[in-house]
Image (spheres, rainbow, N blue to C red):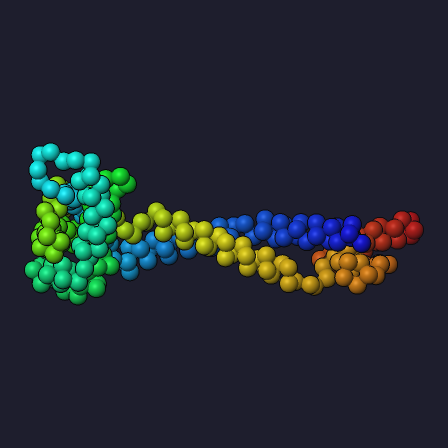
Length: 248
């Protein structure tokens, strides 16, 4: 019983392989079409975004002699500062200062604050469709948040050690990534449809299918119409030749 199931599984896989091989050009065409659609979507419908970054150094005190305890305190403060940088008062002041066409919640979605491991540095990153505006926002955010933290925490404000730059290349969307995803999607979907069609196709095409699906053995088979016509013509010619031979 297990051998029969394994044999049927091998036949099914072979049929799927033949179906995929037969329609390989169709699958490739579908994949290329989806890649072209992904490229057009990226160029026409997706808004390009530019990123500008700034950096701030968290200080526990501005004295020349800083102890190990001060360094530890500064490292712990970075987590608090990261939250304060994206707080509503800071973002609201940034939007008001630059007269941005967005509210503070929308601005927050385009801001990322990271703290490199084992450092007291905060990296501020801003995304915007306008590269110059991305720099203005990140610089204003650095100044406003530094002043706000100093006032609210009653500590020395973080020191801005790196201002933003005007980006020259967009950071998103990635054309190559989207095209590759479109190509893979077209490849998988088209191949999946062919496999599904092959698996669900239970029509009888060969003598082996009769035995496989019906459990019967064929005693004879009817040739294809083209083969029948070809064979019939050939037979006539042979018959005529034999008749002439008899008359002679």
